Image (cartoon, rainbow, N blue to C red; front, side, top):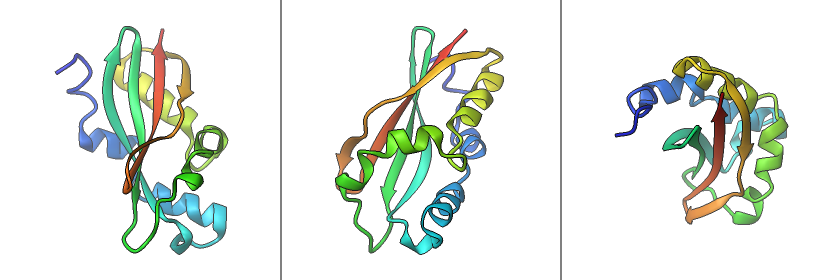
Length: 126
């Protein structure tokens, strides 16, 4: 396991990005949480040099369709949406590792399967 793997456990990831944030996002976006076709979770994907790699994981909700045309524009939406609060996640990650985050970037949506799409989140540490 890498040096940060023991910090970013499932419990810590739940604190950084609570499970109910997807419902709050869909409520803000559509006015109804039932309109959401996926759950959003945060995953830790390792480190590379001074960068920590995370993923915003979009998992299809039962009875819903996770259509790729709905997820490809999400990096731009997520980067500025106050409910998703990527900047807040980045600051909390920096605090967790005792280092400041210099910059962050959301990558393009990647379709892992019909039921799972991921948006890479790379955080550069100072």
